[in-house]
Length: 412
Image (cartoon, rainbow, N blue to C red; front, top):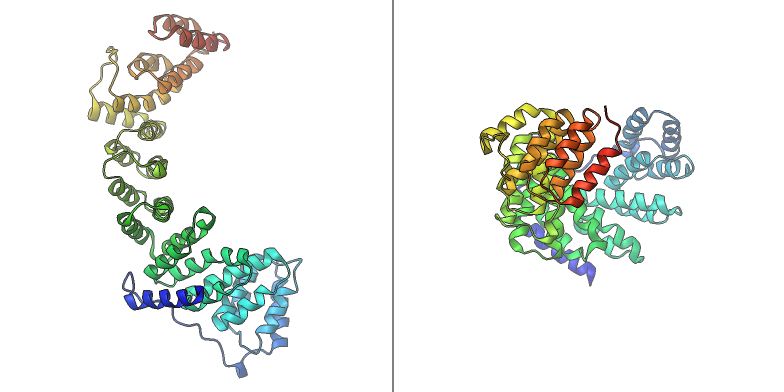
């Protein structure tokens, strides 16, 4: 039943056309005429010699050239050399060999790997072989084979590599359909993770975001949620600006749903590594939330650490001007922005920070900044800190806590 479904779905996907208008699967690999290639014994000896090379780069290059000469007649020799070195094998060597063998004879390669006695090696081998099989444009055959694997645990573990390989082949829509069919909760998360990573590898962040947008329009069930979260996470690492735009389109100006929480701060963190101001201005237009507040504090705080003068000038010009003698509490957004600036100012000029902190809205963030000012100011001027604490219009219990902090620090 499962195999019939895979065949039907795969055929339908291919018949429907290619998601990005490109052919499915790369050109086949050409191997030499068996009459011109090494014999099995010669191949085994050559591979054994190559495996003795201690430098991974040189060894990988030598093995790659050897495996370009694989034939049905000598592949057993290469396999013997690779598999008999169980105590000294390197996963990279194993992957190079299997990737080549699958191009030559995929089903034989996979069947051979299934018979390997060492579980960890077998798992690595199956993942590589199934992924490469599907990536070669033979996703239907690879899928049918995986559905026939008797052990349910093994069958489950190769589904992620299968979907990733299908995506690597270029048939993105077919891979998406297959991922939807195979996904059944977080225990099958590798199916979606493999799908997104496959797209990212061959098409880049733009294609991942196109899929995310497509899926978001279809609903927000468990499958769609996982696609969106993983897609935003991985695409954001390559193109945070475009990913932030996609996030905004999904949330449509509203507070993010529970399943999407954390991603605004994640994207702001990725983007501010490249452009603090752009990231900050993006966060500001998002709907108010605790996550937005934290992202504002952290983003302008990062900018202040790198260039305090520019960060403060932007704040004063875009949100002010502000008067240091004014003690009026700021609105929520400006309070968050000021908190990030005060966090830096407390270290470099704590007396100035003490004048600005009163304009931050009461709450946990201001309490943290008050503690920070005390810790950095006390070693410089303990009497001034004591006098300042007496003027603060705060809860007596909080003042007492700040006083204890001050008294625990040695001052001049």
